[in-house]
Amino acid sequence: MSMKTMDDQQLITSYLTGDNKAFETLLLRHKNRIFRFILMKIKDRDLADDIFQETFVKIINTLQLGKYNEEGKFLPWAMRIAHNLVIDHFRKTSKVRMISESSSFSEDYSIFNILSTGEENTLETMTRTELENQMVDLIDHLPETQREIIQMRIFQDLSFKDIAEMENISINTALGRMRYALMNLRKLIDKHQLVIDIA
Image (cartoon, rainbow, N blue to C red; front, side):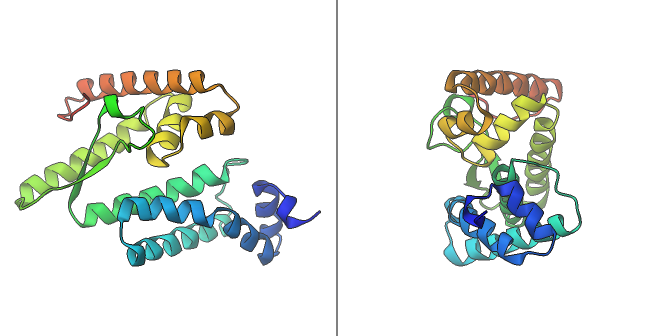
């Protein structure tokens, strides 16, 4: 079987048995999409390249440690790693992200809009960072199907069409899951008394 015809899981299995060319094939298959995702968030090609390299170092380390268990879902998993590294970057540069339900169904919108915090004092910066951390934690409390669609639609900027194809569901089902996820997220925000904009 040609490596180009192997699916992601087969390439990973081959790589873990010592075939480095399998990982090269995997990298070539997905690198453009992952890099574009990072660049769209960072808007700095050199910095995006650094984060891209860091993403694949983390992917390699996780695979070699035997901690990869996302069978059949390599791309969403890799995009999640890239997203987390992007978040780490913005945390270090004291940026804040806001959430807007009304815009989250638009294909060109990312739920974590990056806004400059301006001249904030240390307390304000700490408060914003803590709020951001709590938001990420709250998403982890959603049911699995809702958590996955939040991660794919919002964190990975996948279209509803892409999500429907990846999950083998209709676009209407994907939209429905997104709607319930945002409703539940609002309830969690109210429960934990977070002050954040969900319009």
